[in-house]
Length: 207
Length: 384
Ligand code: SF4
Ligand code: SF4
Image (cartoon, rainbow over all chains, first blue to last red; front, top):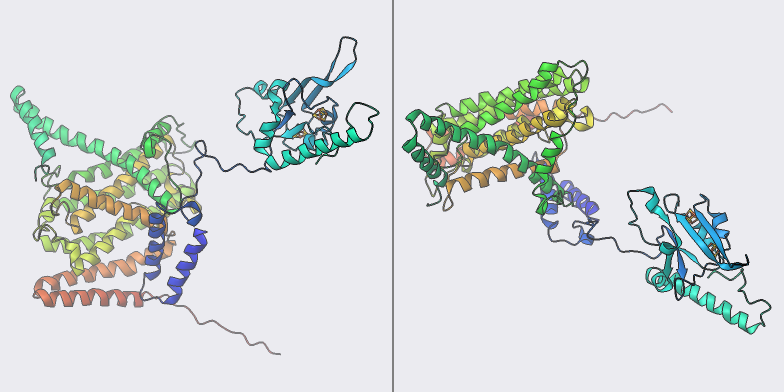
């Protein structure tokens, strides 16, 4: 960028001729003076100041960035996509996910989580949970300002982890689109073939 | 000019008020105390804001903003730095010479504050119009070598001592051409008093500055280089070369002691620029604006040039540094005295041609004489 430009310019000055002792010094002064002046009105991509004043402004968010996992629900937070199968709990390398399946009064499993906690202070943002979940339920978030004074505040219970599908669309439109399509296709296929069991197949295609 | 003597008027007003209620000796004491307090406050305040100015300008040169978090445009940054310095732990090395280690930073600040006495800040705004003002300035400013060496020696650290040695060598070397570069000015104005030197540069709308003569220009350039070397600023910052000597003479200093070294350095940068303005740039002389605005404008311009140099140049090598002083600046400053003499002996137009020619010629001659010997590249013919 500007650095390379300055270097080239400096080389041009010096190579041409050296009229007198100290000429190179004057050329160097000219380069810094010009950079000083242009820093006031040039845009960042033209060699101006490119510092991003962080707390006030942020770098543009890009879709593929990832940090901490969250859970997606479709209509209401009471109906999460998660069926508490516990695969992510088993696959998490640092074992920071804790899933408990809800049961009715007869002790019959209800295919939804009674508790779903993720300890953000342990999570290492690997994204394994997103990859292994067969129900397209857990995804990596873009939220990065999660600093807390106490470790306990980094323990996320289910209420805090659940976010709507439209939020998922807003941060990762392409992925969300693909996953919605996959879910719809799976549902249609299931409707076409006479369902033997009411539950969706655990091997639903991911994307 | 209504605003010109505004500060003098203020002081006179205050003294008049004192004279109504107090005996004469109180008024005299008050007069001294006012000048002293103004200088003692101005020195540190200037230093604080020079650090901010330096960081801002360097930032811009390097495509950064510089400090901009504390207050608008970072204007309170120096205050924050000061508080930080005050609450830092003061570490004294176990085997250091405790007393001298403590004294050195204190002693450094004193001469840099003392130089403020003879700086003519405006028309009639010299704290003490000594009739040996310039001599006083030369003597006082060369004292700074001693506290730097004291500090380096007392901290019992090899990097400190190396830095102190370099400081001593460099400052003594650059003292010589600096003093000689001042001589033509003294010849021209026939006086050693700073205020009178400025007055002798009046005339022609107050634009009759010495820098507009060939010898003045050469003298100014020599003086300015030496001034940068005197206050250890880059590219002459060998005593504190951080890439070689950690921090040079102030390696073992922390907290407020370190801040005092810094304060001395920045106040020196300011006073040396102020004296350069006094000697060559016509001091407070200038058309239209009040004299003190001219003076501070010119001085801050020179300080900005120093910062600009810092943002541009690499550090000298030790032998190049000494060679530059003794083999280039010193002979040039001697020749410059001769040129100034010729200027006063020959009539106007001839003087211009003669002296300008001599300045250019001597510059090229000394460059030629200083050419480093580069041996021819040897080629080895191997037997086949
Ligand atoms: S991102 Fe990795 S570490 Fe974090 S919860 Fe998911 S599997 Fe565990
Ligand atoms: S793998 Fe998916 S469905 Fe199974 S518990 Fe984890 S988030 Fe819920």
